[in-house]
Structures are given as C-alpha cells and as structure tokens.
Image (tube, rainbow, N blue to C red):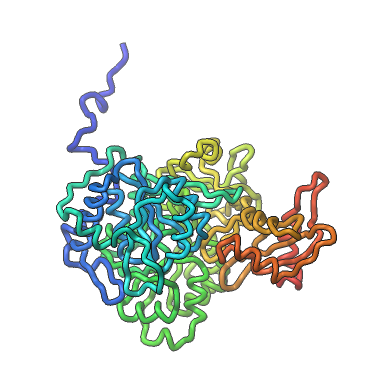
Length: 547
C-alpha cells in the first residue's frame, strides 16, 4: 500500500496561503504605506505615490472601458516621462501586455512590431511623430488607437493622437478594482530584440519573472528604501531593467530625463541628491569626460549599474575618480535585462585600481533570484573547465527567463534546447566562478547599450547597386563602446565612395545602425564562399587604416 505523504494531504493552495506573484503589488503597498512620499519628478512636476497609483488605476480603467484586456497589447513610443512609468502598472492591471518600443528605430521596424504584436493602443510622444506617422501609414486600417502623451519639454512635432493621455485618464475610475493575474506566469511585457537574422523577435516576459528581478535589483545592489533614481537608462530597454517596478518596491523617487546630457544630469544630481542610476558604458564615459565644473558641489557618491558592451577598465577608473561607484551587471532582453552581477568581494578593495577594474569588468555570477548562469560547451552541454581560458557559451536558467518568443515556436525551442537559455555569447569561466565574455557568436554589435544586428546592416549595404558583398563587424569606439564597421566588395567595374554608401544606408537604417566606416576590399572567404569575419575582426583591431 502506497504511503500518503502527510505534507501534501489536506495542505493545498488556497486564497489564504497562495497569491500569484506580480510587481503590480508593489505600487499598491507603497501607495498605502507611503502615500505622500514623492514618486516622480519630471521638470517642475512632482507627484506622490498615492497620486501615481491613482493615475495608474485611471489608466487601467480607461483602457478597460475601451475594450483592452487579457491577450491584448498596448504599445508605448515614449521617452522617460511619467506616463511611461505609469504604463508599467496601468497596462498590466487590465490583464494586457505592455510593449515598449525602441525610440531609435525606423518606421519600418516600428510598423512591424505594432503589426506583429497586434497593438490595440499606442501611447506616443510628439518627439517621435515623424517616424510614428510613417509607421501608421504602413499599417493602414491595422493601425491602433493613438493616444498622445503631452509633455512641456517635448521638442516640436505633430499631434497624432485621437485623444490626449490626460483626456484618457479623465475617462478612468480612480477606484478601479484591478486583479492580479490568474497565473503568475501570465505575460506582462513584450520587448523586441534583434535575432541572428536581423528580424526582430518578440520576447514575452511574465509577472513572476518581473516580480523576482525587480526584487533582485534591490538585493543585489543593496538598494536602500527611498533611493532617488535618475532615469539615464531608457525605460523602453528591457522595461528599464525592471526598475519601474523596483522603484515602487522601495518607495523610491524616479527623476525623469528625456535625453542623456551631462549638462542636464549633473544639475539634477546636485538638486535632487541622486543616489542611483543605470546605463551603458557610453553614459558614464559622457559623465566623466564632461567639464569638471559641472560636478562642482556634488560631494556624495552616486551608485551606478553598468551593462552593455564589456566596459573597459578605464571607465571604472574614471568613474571612481569622479565619485561614481560602478557595479557591473549582465543580461539580455530574454532575461529581463540584468540577470547576472559581478558581485564584489571584500578582498578586492585592497587591490590597485587597475586590478579592481579588471575584476569588476567581468559578467559575474547569477542575480540573487536567478537560478544559474554558467558557461557550457554548446555541443555537449557540459561545463567548460573553470580555467579562464576554455571558451564556451553563456547559458541562463531560472525563473527570470522569458516565456519565449511571440508567434515563433521554432526560435523558442532553439533558445531553450537542452533545458537552458542559450545567449549566443562566448565566454570563459574563471576559477572563482565568475563569467567573462570573450566574443559574441551572434555578431550582434552593442552600440551605446543598443543591439545592432550585423546582418541587418549587411542587408542594407547589399541593396546598393554597386555592392556585391558586405560584411559588418564591431569596431571599438571610445564613446559608444562599439560601432558598425563595414567591409564592402564591389561588383566588377562598379565605382562608389564611402560617402555615397553611408548616405544610402541612412535611407534604409535607423541612424545609430549606419556604419561609422566603410572599407572597400576583396572579402576573405572560405573554400565554400563563407565570409571569414574573424579575419575582419582582427583587421579592425590591428590595421592602422581602421583605427
């Protein structure tokens, strides 16, 4: 007779002992406990946590009344303004999914994402009216309801909305009774990322993962209650690394910033006593190379998370001298942004700055609430030796991993083959268990924290009538970390110039994807005709013609 497990019988989940995890609970709690603490500062505008919660409820109510609910998508083409933060709560409160759009993309990419994600509503800002108008024209009758988010600091642009954001909120009920997701694994957000082919893939994340990674931000970074956070990281990027939800968890203050500019950042740091910020290496490079007088009067330490292209040691050294204490994190859109951290050891403090910078530049160890990050042989799926030399691929596993790619089961199956998430990033494992990236097998170029698919750029180059073949690799850049460098092989008898190629690319690509340099060469190939990109990477590193 089988024994009945006494720890299961009669001890089932019920409403008293189980609640689905969702970061939406953070704002409800904070609005109740710290209603009058400042939640958002944007220029002269300030609003408390109870005001912010009420506005989120109005947004959810108004969207629900217009038919938005479970299975629907609400897109946002917004800079770091209060409405973007509110959307991270108001949209999922309806059961719908928030799709934050990369404001640097071109109209064709935006149109694809709105169509593929089946956006029912689009929140937009007049700064992006030109590209949004073009995207809406491409969609025709498939275009979503457009809501105009008005902001006094927005540059000139056309009004595209069928109604304003404030008018939409006025339709909503401030006592809207929102409900947690029926299943904590329900989708909360949709973020598009470039795949190896250059075609955007829709990364679907869930309430459970957003809850856990928002909490991991607090634990890993030792974030204090009521921190003051400056939005130097775009909220559209991996949902701002989950920090809209993190700031609600710690009842902190979000200081909004439309664009990254040291002349704007340092006065805000001084005025509001900014304690924390996030960004790509370029953000910190801009800050440390800004005129010293901008930093006058700032005597407190600013804590910064840094991620993107592996930051050079010089960035850590310069930031330390400027009073910015960096912590290196690593991740991808598929793992909600940062899901690994270069956790600092006490013994590192006694090392010279160069030694500390080298150690802090590694991708590190799992985030507190991520199960694991490791380096495996992608063929055998066995761990590589922890010798700091043997190359393998970085893999993630845990609750802070996406549900999968929207409408793309083949890509989802490939990404999860072997029971791990395949990053495509090549790395080594050091003896102390810390991961260090050595190369990127996907040939993705990380420029200013944004991913650029080399194949997408190559496709644009090959549209030029004089181009026979093209290959694009990453070129190190002091400002952006990496930029695209193009190698072009012309058709027999054809002639063109670098200026002509670049002008052509600007008509087919978002500006940040346009190569910064074009070299005309006979491309190195294998016997089967495959372009040998490793030769081009070596040429970029060593050739004075490219430096």
